[in-house]
Image (tube, rainbow, N blue to C red; front, side):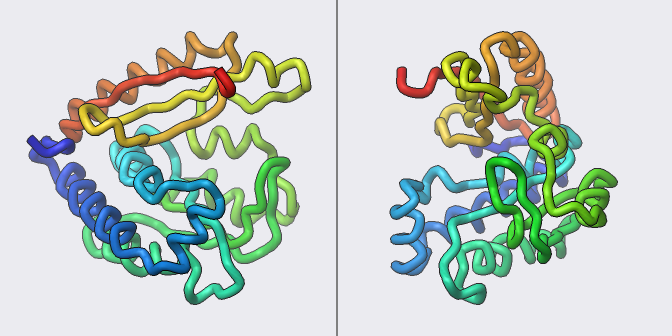
Length: 215
């Protein structure tokens, strides 16, 4: 049985998206593959079809796409990914793809050059329109529908957990985010909602893993 088994338009779109992603990373040029490896990223862990699925079924506002970058914009992984995987999506589904062209950063990452994929999300438009070059981690978490937060102090580093939602039975990582131990109840409620909607609308089964970095 296909891991996305439902007979719905959204499921068909995600099945085809997943197939394009797998083909893209299987045929990634040597230089781009080496760039991923240099950042300790396995191409097999780079699939984003789960994140896109969460957007299509209305669970999260948007997907933020940011692959490691090299000196050339035309040969960057993000550019090649958009051409091969994302652009065909627009022929199947009413979706918005916005690139951040101006300086913009959070405390944790540089966002210039990133792609935002969404269904006409007002929060995304708010981010694109703002003049400030800084964006809060709180707003990013809201945009990406993460129910946990990164450590806000040195004390919270020791209580941070890594949360993973993965596909069953393949164990492909669908999304991952940080959360504090005192947020795990809301994480479990969040996962239950995702699990139910993905099963109902996509025929996609989700599993949950919570782990402590370094343990």
